[in-house]
Amino acid sequence: MPEAQSGLSRTAAHLHSAMKAAADGIGILLVDGFHYLALFAIGATTVWSALAAFCEMFAKGRAELSDILLLFIYLEIGAMVGIYFKTTRLPVRYLIYIAITALGRVLIEIGGAEHKTGEDLLVVAGAILVLSFAVLVLRLASQWDDPSDPSHRRQFDRTC
Image 1 (cartoon, rainbow, N blue to C red):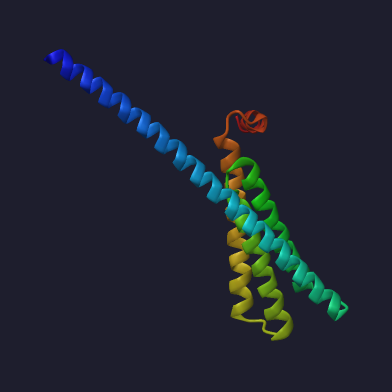
Image 2 (tube, rainbow, N blue to C red; image 1 turned 60 degrees about the vertical axis):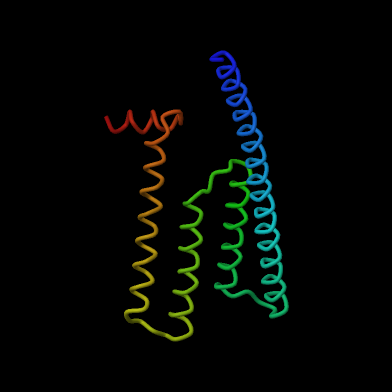
């Protein structure tokens, strides 16, 4: 009788591992499918929005600085989607670049349209400075974090 229970336990364990492997495979397939679908949707929306903004500039007959910065935002979003599509890693620095560019647009609108020279300009400029410092910290941390990166060895040799 103990042999029958042992055989039953092995069969149950084998069945359990087979079910888990099948569920893991289906889960990975669904997650990857969702990622690709979402990336294509974000990419298509970015292209659509950039084309619409460009057509508006063309219809106006001129492009203002805030319009050009908007196109840079679309470019950064497209680059971020492309990098994520190729590497499945989300480059956080690109999000910060987008935020800096968006704050630059706000800075231009505050300074140009309202002719304010007070607190609003300082707050936005301070936010850009903080985000720029964050990019610097992320770049330095990424160099120190990846020992397989050849630039890591050069950076380490210079500081020691």
